[in-house]
Length: 228
Image 1 (cartoon, one colour):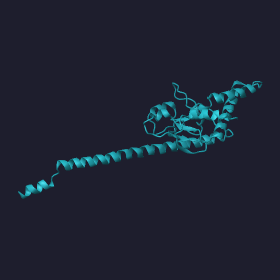
Image 2: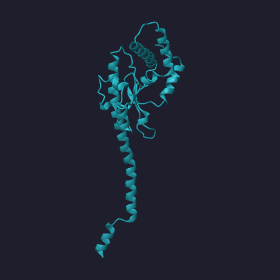
Image 3: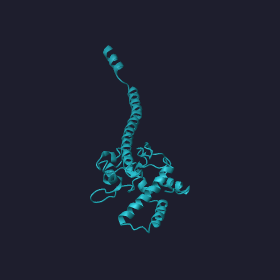
Image 4: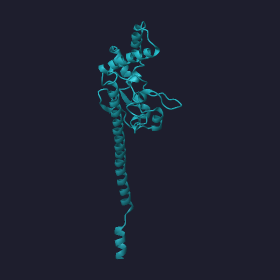
């Protein structure tokens, strides 16, 4: 009888087991999101390190062209032979095309980024195609119609005009637009992976939440188009 009583005292009741399961569930609900946040933070830090490296390469390249921003497409063009052009090609002499710094570890579609050549959008390459910039470029090109230029020289002069106008926009509002930023296609809404951005002053941070960059562009030009 005494042994049986001791055995009953040592056993768990159903209520005690349910209490233990409940406590474990509560702990897991706290720990799992915390681990996910730590992982997202580590991916974001790695992304920001990439942007710093690329931003430093852009600054080095700018020093060779009198401080102007390189004018190229905002993303490489997809071809059967792989991505061509864009900032990846412009900085090819400084950073290898297969460098991991071109790709954000937090991308939800890393294979898509590899196929595109990079995870990051080069915003000056997008701003150059805005109507406000192209209208001014057309005026500058029209003024030089009397000059005898080869097609290559004309393309170069057009790029120089675009660089001056886009560059004046960044000089006017250096923190209004990023130079490089994560693609929204790779950081979809709800993924909770923050989009990072590098700015012309060298700072790298989470992309500030001020709405669409294209809308910001329109608001800046509405205040008066920048002059080269």
